[in-house]
Length: 196
Length: 321
Image 1 (cartoon, rainbow over the protein chains, first blue to last red):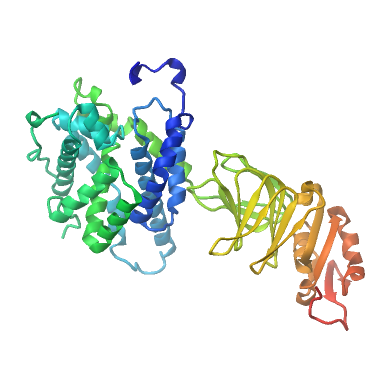
Image 2: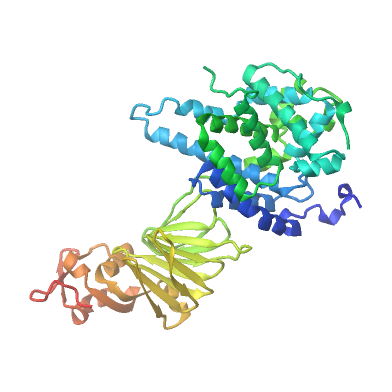
């Protein structure tokens, strides 16, 4: 039976009820905490608290959603939670300091940069809409389903290196579009290069 | 001029490679350590990495990427409302995560005790004059008892620790019923009715006690002293209207009585330092106060609505132990 035709009874199953959840917890907990500590420092927010929250979120998700790999999910949720927590703290700090002159003039742009503005999201929608099919497929497998490059390679019958290269190219197009405001698909490799 | 790092520069390319590795490759702690070293090497590294990371995060929330099936029928870009209103399942989950993480609200009591439901499904009964604060927006099983006393019924939650910070002391449990008290003097008492409790002390989190049902520990100035309750149900005798103290400063007893409505009661600093071991029904508090001169070298002076407890003239000011 394919994963697409799960029995009805399992539709309301949550991630925490799956054996894969405990496995993910055991495998990814340490990696995630180490990463959060490396990326953001000791906090606040406390890396372990954030990791805890991310796994809770995973556990409460219905397991029949288009999320195949929990690792990318908890990493992404944890990064978002930390960024959000930092933004709030900075905002609060600024409010408390309202009576004093701004101490760090480049504080505000920093906060803004952390948020992808609504216009930028629209621009990214446009970039994705114009991508070659393979590039969009790999990107969705990575960003939406949370598959690793190796898993995408296995599914698509291509090398992990090609998956990485394809997603790297796509990300670069997005970054250039955001930096320069122009969408330019040159530099994307052609479909015919596909091998197995 | 522009703060953005050129994504095609060597730094921009390397930053993107790092961000992609985090999202799509095994990332053991050794790699995290390498990443930290790279980020620290140059402020531009960190900036470039954050930019690549932000783009990858944003891509995860794109409607057109999550639902490519909608694409061939009609260009979704012609309907901007479609992506504003139609949030993807993953994005919705993220939003939920952020909403749940609201600023912690303090739980406080006046002259009456109060039972409160904690966010993780556990409950706490707060004694009068107490204040309990969630310690973290991110963790619904961590609290700070800033003032007073609380009795916790902790629900088991898949091995997740439940933690209460009381001054320098930290209490940690999995699922149990226990009482925590912080006194005006800074003395902390933990008593267990059911289950097991670990008590840690100070910055280094040194374990000072491991308690089972019926055990209690007093922590004062970093020193812990354990003992047995007459019965496990005595862990929070205050809930049955009884106050019990073992080797507590008289000032703490007075503070508890004031918090419970005996507003006119005062104690001089010298008398507050005296130690007392006592147990009495709250509704007998006036008799208890009147009997204090029989237990301790103190006098109780009444004037107007005020009662002041002071050290009896002629006795030494150093508190007997």
